[in-house]
Amino acid sequence: MASAIPTAMERPHFIGIGGAGMSGIAKILAQRGARVAGSDAKESATAEALRSLGATVHIGHAADHLASDASCVVVSSAIRADNPELARAAELSVPVVHRSDALASLMGGLRAIAVAGTHGKTTTTSMLAVALTELGLDPSYAIGGDLEGPGTNARHGEGDIFVAEADESDRSFQKYDPEVAIVLNVELDHHANYASMDEIYESFETFVGKVNPGGTLVVSADQQGAVELARRVRDQTGLNVVTYGESEGAGVRVHKITPRGLTSEVTVLLGGKFLTFTVSVPGRHYALNAVAALAAGVALGIPAHNLASALGKYTGVKRRLQLKGEAKGVQVIDSYAHHPTEMTADLEAMRGAATEARLLVVFQPHLFSRTQELGKEMGQALALADLSVVLDIYPAREDPLPGVTSEMIIDAARAAGATVTAVHDKETVPDVIAGMAAPGDLVLTMGAGDVTDLGPAILARLSN
Image 1 (cartoon, rainbow, N blue to C red):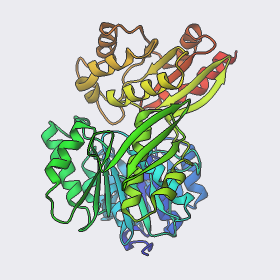
Image 2: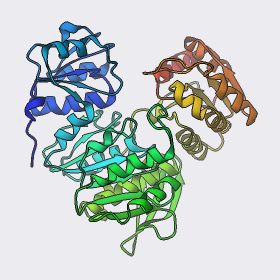
Image 3: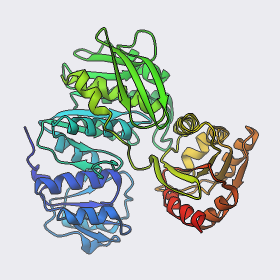
C-alpha cells in the first residue's frame, strides 16, 4: 500500500485551507506527517481541527503567511489571481498545485473509488467511508462535508482503499484514476464553467475514461443524464458498466424502498438474490445513494451482505437534512440543497418523514449564475413547502450579475402557488420564523451558503 508523502507535498501551503475540499487534503497530509500550513478568511472549527493535527493556520490572507521554504502552494478554483499569497508564491518560484492534483497524488497506489454526479456525491462518499470503516477496512477518504459519526471530512487510513468525492464543477474530477467510478446523475449546473449539456457530457466522459483498465463504472439506471452517459461510454474498452436503480434491467435492481419515519428499508435484487437493509436517513434519494455505494463496494470484491449491513451505520453528514435541535415543539433541520433537483428531493423527503407537520423553509440562493439559469425551477421547488422565506443571493466566489436577484425565485414560487416572504436582512430571520412557526412544525434552513448559521439562532429565538 502507498501512503508516502509526495515530495511536492512535504511542506504544502493551502490558500483557503478551511474549505471543505481543501481542509480534507490538508488533514490527510498532516496525518501522513507533512508540515502543513495555510490561511483562511476567518476563524473556524475546521481551522482548530487542523491545528490539532499540527498544521499552522493563519487567519486572513497576507504575503508573509507563505513560508519561503514551502514545497508548494495548493489552491482551489475559488482562489482569485490577485490573492497576495499567490503573488508571493510567484516571487519565490514556489510551484502552485490545484487541489485536484494534490488529491490525485494522495490516491496514488491505492484502490480508489471516485464518486461523481451533480447531486449526492457527499452523501454517497460518506456512506462508503462509514461502511468500509465499520467493516475494519480502514479506508482513507476525502469528503465535501463532515460526517456525523467520525465528525470529520477526511482521514488517512492504513487500508488500501481511498474513497473520494469527485467534483465536476471545474472539471477537476478528470485528474483522478479510480478503480471504481460512481456517477449518480448528470445535469446542467455550474453555469460559469459549462455552457451546455454537451459540455457536461464531454466532461463526464473524460472522467469515466480515466477509470483503470478492468475497472468499473457504477451508474444510475433511472436518471436521464446518467443513462445517456452510460450509452456513450458503454463500448469503452476494458470498462465494466454496472447500472443500479428502480428501472427494469438495472444490474442492481431496487425492488422496494419502504419509508420508516426518518429511516428507510431497501430491498435490492443483486446477483439473483434479494437483499434487504436499512438506510438510517430519510428520503428515496438517500436510499438510492446507498444502493450506489453497495454496488461500488461489491465491484471492489466486498461481500454484499456484509456491506449492506455496514451501510446501516451511516447516520448522516452535516448539512444533509441534519437535525439542529427542537424548541417549543418546532424541529429545525439544515439542508445543503441549492440546486432545484436537490431542493425537491429534500423537501419530498421531509414530507414523507413527517406527513402531519407543516414545512417552513428558509432558502438562501447560491451563486448569481445558478440563480440566473435555474431561478424559476428553484421557485417551483419551494411550492412543496407550506411557507417559505427567501434571502438574498449568497455570492460565494461570484460578482453580481445585472438584474439577477432572489426576486426571480420569489416570483416563480408565487406563480407556482407558494406562500413566500422576502427577507433582505438575514439577522431578522429568527424573528420572522418565530412569528410563523407553531408546535409540530418543521423548519428547514436550505442553501449552500451561510444560511446554515441561522439554525441555532432560530432555536434560541423560539426558546425565548
